[in-house]
Each structure stands twice: as C-alpha cells, then as structure tokens.
Length: 148
Image (cartoon, rainbow, N blue to C red; front, side, top):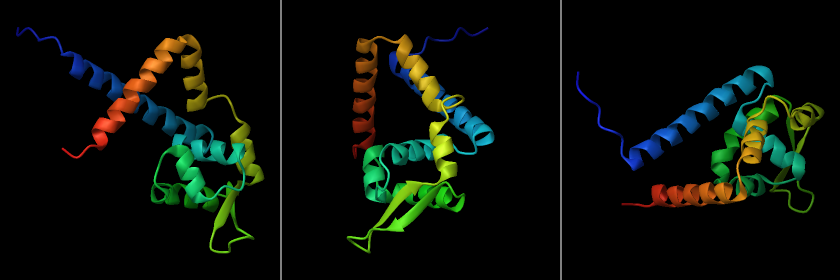
C-alpha cells in the first residue's frame, strides 16, 4: 500500500473552493426544481426586487459582472414571465427591468434558497472570519484575472 502525501496548503484550499462551487451548483439545481429559478436567476430577481426599474448595466454592476454576461439570464427571466422590460421614458434606447407578480413571489421566498444557507453560515461565523474570507476571495479573484 502506497502512503499518500498530505496535500499542500494550496491544494487543500483549492479543494475547499471546489467543494463550495459544487455545493453552489447542487443547491442551484435544487432551487430550479423547487422554486423554478437557479441561484444566479434568483440573485438577479433579488437585486431587481430591492431596486426596481434598473437597467441591465445597473444590475450587472450590482453583480460585479459585465452586462453581456447578464443578457441571457435577463432574457430567460423575461421569457418565463418573472421580469418585464420597459422603455426608459427619458432615453428610449434604454430599457429598465422590474418584477412581475410571479417574480415578486420568488423574491419573497426565503426558505430553500442559497441565500438562506449563506445567511445561516454567516450567522455561525464571526465578523473577523467573514472579513478574512472576503479578503481572500477578493485576492483570488484579482489573481485569477491577471494575465500571466
């Protein structure tokens, strides 16, 4: 029997991140079955629910994403009758998004969501832990965005 070498700190940390990504994916698929929307779709619904009549650019900025990344999600939510787009009266080239009654129902849902799980985890962690994780994640995003 060959003894396994212990994983280094970097590999251990990466494994934890992949565990998190997998858990998000599983929870998102479960939400799609139970609520009818995926995790990213619900996040968009929550942002529009918090600030109705946002443009795609404003929603994307709230997510820290490029608007083109968001266009498919917005289109799917609109096709499913959860979002409605209206022409901006001040600038007819711009559209704004708001929730339909069906979108508002999903926005009000609190049980069985990724958000609820994150809220429970944050309640179990201390402020220092939360700040440290946030800082490390920001550093990882910065490093992964670099062109080496």
